[in-house]
Length: 430
Image 1 (cartoon, helix red, strand yellow):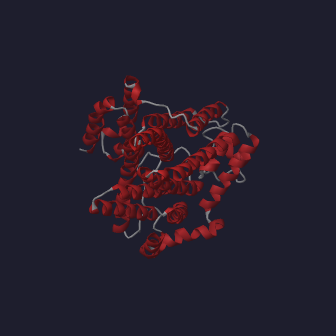
Image 2 (image 1 turned 90 degrees about the vertical axis):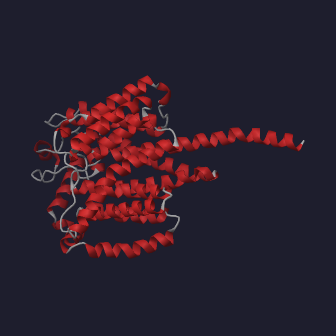
Image 3 (image 1 turned 45 degrees about the vertical axis):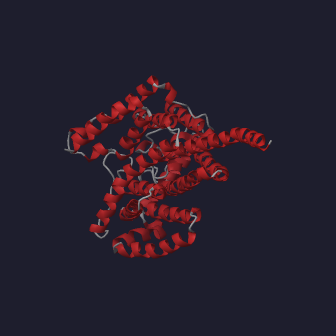
């Protein structure tokens, strides 16, 4: 039954994509972030839904070029440069394994990110993209939160099999990122019960993140909540709520959860933590030896670790977005990667500084603040996870760019209308 429902949703939506290509972008985000076919039990699991949606969207863009506009911004061009650099570093990959399958996967993500960026233009588009992310990740957050309550936190929460967020650490970070977006949408919902449902979903996402037993997610959650409080316009109310709910959540979790989190203070005695540090040092040594191009994809194997790791027998994935990019794409790749987040942050700061000039743009300030809170969660939690190519942060970048462009357009329209209004006023006085 699930296979039939998912297939009907996808193929039933395709005609609307030809009517307006933007719907293809929303459908792509849903299928790539939620991966609903992984929740089926039959033939839908192997269906190439992503390829079908991507192909249909591109064809619709060609058929309706007026609906497409490339966002000529610094962030967009840095993303293009980063994608091109990853292609270049693959040519100089030093590992024995074939890097092309992973490059193919990453390039598809980056290209579709650009496609989404070319189709998001209005406030409604921006809000629909946010909704697509919230629904896609919120499904697992609500499900995981209820599971944590039912099991009293005795078992770990895991993500959908075969996806970026399959592991307990990965799903936890994704759920932490989606909470601020839920809070933004909660402010747009007018109905009392709708608001309560969104707040409840956000709470379940937090509980699911705790139920993952992820130490990195716990650190990211603390950083995100702290920054959320700083960005909040109701600091007293939110602070009081955190003071009340945080101890309750911690008391709810069982002893084995506290024992797991407490190992943060004794990481030297934890084999997993030391394995990550070994992988980080390997990435640094590799990048120092190949500073321009790094080692390319597929560097987490015995051959590379024997060359560059302090402990060649302790083979781990990067477990850090920063060391992952450094080891795979060198210092140039890391510089482009960090520049992406610097520029997207400055875009948000620009919106906050200028959008306050018009009351009708107040919603953009609230949105940008929540986007920044979400990025803080990712940048902190990502320091302990190999999620450099996770697509949700790139969609957040797209939302940020689209929001800034919309604010710029609105402000320009106001400036253009001002002389006409003054002239009309002068005529009425005369």
